Length: 104
Image (tube, rainbow, N blue to C red):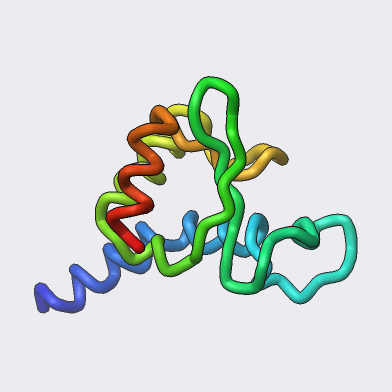
């Protein structure tokens, strides 16, 4: 019974992430205004980091890592996911680069 509850909770937690990634990534097949920018390779998505909102293209596989999921939860709390810019992560670029180099 506990396994079912844990998996249900996991699905509920990942649903918002999946919607955002679909909108911001190259996995979408749509060719209209909602399609991702041409410079985002398949299997990647854009995030904006730091004071200057520097743009980084990162692999979708990062979504599996707890540290990155934590950043996404912080982003949802601080900025929400219902805006056009994409995912804005609330951390300094130096910390973000350290995290991404560790995840690669």
